[in-house]
Amino acid sequence: MMTKLIAPSILAADFANLQRDIEMVNQSEADWFHIDIMDGVFVPNISFGMPVLQAINKHAGKVIDVHLMIVDPDRYITTFADLGADILTVHYEACTHLHRTLQAIKAAGMRAGVAVNPHTNISLLEDVINDIDLVCIMSVNPGFGGQSFIPNTYKKIKQLKELILDNNADTQIEIDGGVNSDNAKKLIDAGADVLVAGSFVFKSSNPTDTIKNLKEIANS
Image (cartoon, rainbow, N blue to C red; front, side, top):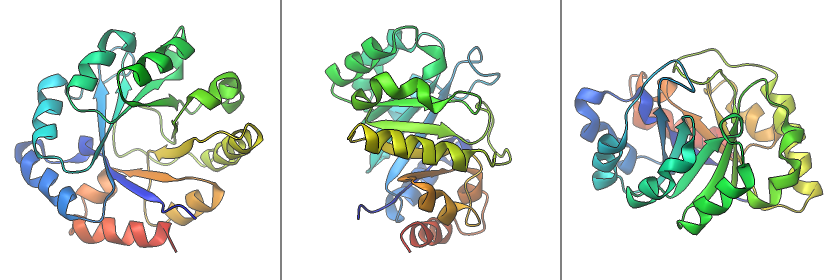
């Protein structure tokens, strides 16, 4: 069985002490850095852009998983490749020509991910599931950290897992939003491979221990 992965979301880090938090993740049992890029158009919030990602990449010693919550992501595919993204995830809802976008991400040397909002039906990915390396199921509405988990997510994970198996696809399932120690095991049991955790990690009294605990729960 493949090891289940933990990806702390840097959106919840202390931006005044970003290098410190990056080093904490490096030294922890986390597997990936999850980086949310928001444009204030696709989602009602602006996070950070290229200079901050470039700074993170200087210190990050693990996989950089970039989640674009932006309109017209095709404009920036090569830019994010140059900035060190290992995985580039675009939103289904933001892509007019999703298949073309996925091919462009892979051509730029990155793994290709697709994120789906809470209202988006998993069946819409059927025609491209074999072209997707990672599906990020949003378990909150995108744009802000610290939101409550949407219970319908469990059903969507099971539907996606069935779609992956039916098509013999090599696609990982990532969950983003409201992940904590109470729901982590249930998410994994439903079929998740990667758990993104932001506020639950960075606002805890000991983020390193919190990451370790999540990793143990996910792989128990």
